Length: 238
Image (cartoon, rainbow, N blue to C red):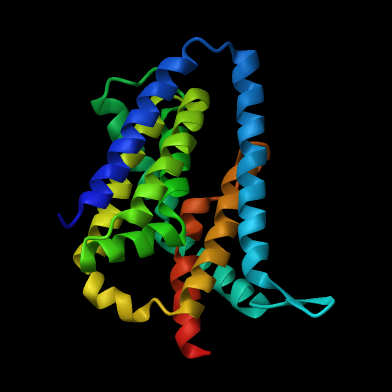
């Protein structure tokens, strides 16, 4: 069944979010704070390790760095484009809409949880590659693995940030579902270089998400999403 992978992924997010939200009700503010910081540390190191794995190569006994120019140009142009269209504001507005529709007006963490978790589970090569495989051959193995990872991530995030995280299943369904539908058109552009660029820049955005939990001035990670598109385009220009 085409699209089964995205349905599985969305269901895993909803279940993980519900379980985390219910569990979070029994956690005091003191333990919630340490849970957020521990989760932030994990997310930042996942982002760092993912980026370095694509940037650093071993040549004999020395290390060499790749993709620096691509990274800088993609982040600068992507962030400018995202800021111009204000994707962060649009996602936040949708979060406010969901907040009203779910009678969660008293939940101050709802929108933050929704935006943070949405960007976290949508960014990355697994979402694109898995959805393409699903669309072309019905192979859901990549999205099945992503579903397990997202279940764990959303479970932890929702325990700290509340039920807004549950609704990150909506952008995941829209994004991955769209990639699945247009899989035959997208597949030829997913070269090894394009995927490496996507993974590198996507990992940097994941680091930004983790850093947002501990920094006073936050990254607008949603406004930086066009970075991964610029990174893929770079692979075909250079």
